[in-house]
Length: 134
Image (cartoon, rainbow, N blue to C red; front, side, top):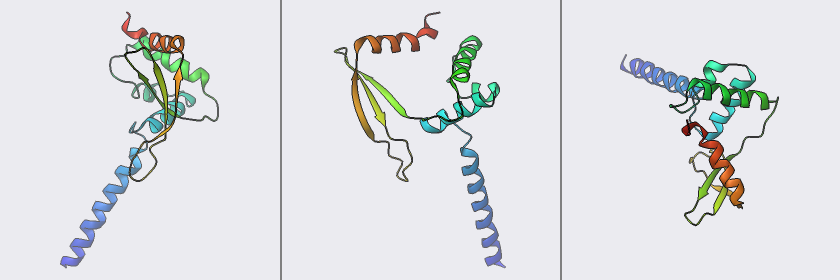
């Protein structure tokens, strides 16, 4: 009888673990996953789910602007890459192309690095900070 209880308990735990991992695909847990969900929700015209992908602090107008930008750019397929900008106090800015987090050990590694022109870095910073200028 104890073996049966242990088996049922282990089966239940495995079932719960499996279900939680399955639902994780619908949560923004990584840059790649969040970008994929962004594309999917825009393609499906699912504004309500799209809103949940944005960091708190956006007003409704900003959310709609971002949503429309993505929706209008969306097509059937997309290549999703992960980049980060590193800006130094000497004014130089690097664009770092990172690997997607797909390995079992969860490492994100550098694929390439390029220096971007000051004008481009200024433009990116200005565009990304628009919401704070209000």
